[in-house]
Image 1: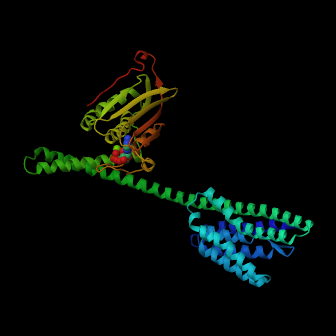
Image 2: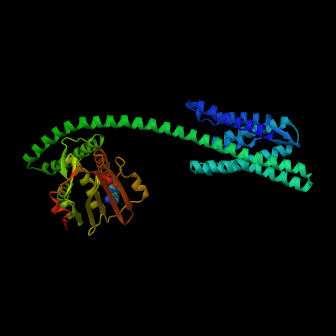
Image 3: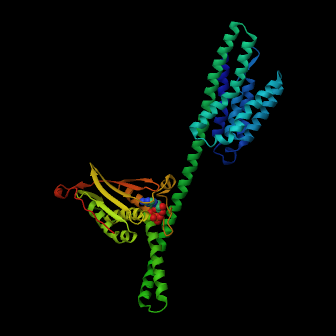
Length: 433
Ligand code: ADP
Ligand code: MG
């Protein structure tokens, strides 16, 4: 029966995938187009051997391995399968010319699609594979049906052939679909394995870097101490140079501290702190900076909310984010900081009317050492994210190029005080210019 033979063909077509998945762990053979070529050639050969003969026609899934070899294995693999097909077809005899023609016809479409195929995402690749896999059979079927109509075959015969065509079509689509999905699953498994290895390497590197940074910090502090002493005593030409050395040393120290803080935020003293108080302290700290940049900072606070945290860490996180907002804003622009609470969560929203970021920049934000500033370190945002996350909070960024950026921080509320209810929603506005 046709269906039985075709299902056997489906198994034959699945065979290369299973063998490949076992061998793919071996780095040398795993990605080799030759392995793919050999396996798919073997599948094509078996498919031809087990084809179903009826009414002078061969029913099998011969083109599927060829299309898959081209799409997933590349030109070399596809070429190998094509040669196998031509050789087997010659050996089988019959209408050889028609066999050759249909072989080339089946090969040309996946060959042409090869480059575009890999620009698609996994889902589209499966769809494309199904369509491309079906097309050589479709063209053969069209020829067949035209033949039936022209020759006006007997009603019974043509009905049977049409029935066969339907079964063939369904099984063929199913076969390509399953194989494409399995192929994609294998590709994803491979990618994941690579990603895990990379993450492990990065982790070790990160730890190494943290311990080096830690070791460097101590001698740096000693050097800084002596330089400060020399700076105080120096009255001559070197005074200017020593000032410069000290500023740069301070910068190096703050980079190392930021990096260490990122690698392992140190929550030394946990206390219940009033969120509004911390925000006020931070804005006071940045007052001079905002004034220098000509940016107005507006603050709206809710004095009821307490969070449990290390004050200095949370301050550091907020300073980094607010400083970024001020730096992004042009002279005369505004930065708004508003804080509110809902249920067990407190919100701090920092929005600016600055230069904003496009999708690409937004995606890179929070990556270590990503900066667009001349004197930037690319550590601020990463450190803030790490601190907020260590506190059990979350942080999200919304930005539009040329319009501004909005940073939303969500922190778990430790408690709210109703004693100080009269201060509730007190609006304090600090205006700087
Ligand atoms: P740095 O400030 O040292 O450059 P950050 O990690 O704080 O490092 O910020 C990384 C980059 O993200 C900045 O260089 C800037 O391009 C971008 N960025 C961060 N915050 C904002 C913001 N509010 N508006 C526009 N760009 C921002
Ligand atoms: Mg910054």
